[in-house]
Image 1: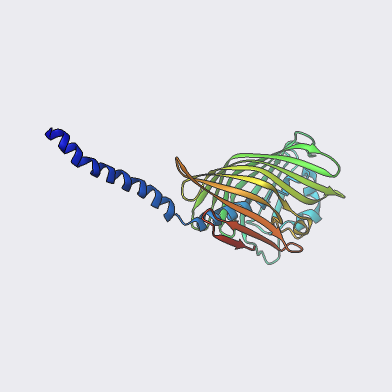
Image 2: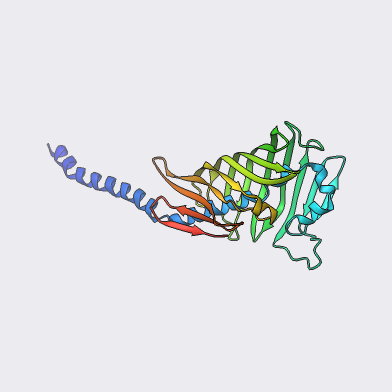
Length: 275
């Protein structure tokens, strides 16, 4: 009887400890600033958009001086006609004033001179930085459809590591499809759909799903500004085994290449970004 009595006295204590542990998990989730997660989603999307236009062009276009001069940042271009590779070097800019916010190199490797069906284009980042943000790893694109007016690329990668100016990092695995509209041999629009998975700044698992295709318009491409003018994506962050939050990014366009990204956080707060 004495033992039973002691157990009764201890039961409320165990129950209190259980409640406290549950509250600690809940408070941990609530204490995470969701605005940082929204900023990261916007940041990742913006960085990934910067180079998706390059694989739409054949290897042979890099011998065109007009095209090379149009590349942002005035890089020096080296071409290996035997290996079908192109090095875009920002450490030695070709501009007279040498001004650029980019550093490092991009290595493009083509499986053939022309982007025919099943041809591959690989972009490798070599100490590449832009505005103090760096990208490490590679992106692989395969031509899955080719028409006079359209070129479709399937992108995959499991090695991308993005770092911001504070060395906070995001690791990504990519499964995306890019549809490019072509007019008079020029790229006039890019439409992107698919998913991203990985690990965010806080060490949590993330998954992004593009609900409505992201579109980069002709007005932006002609200015070499790679801003999304329409589209919608959800970013889901796994906080714990049974807890997750989802943030929504919606892209819109006023006129020309003036774009707005509206970020609706899981907690209901709305953020607006304008590059």
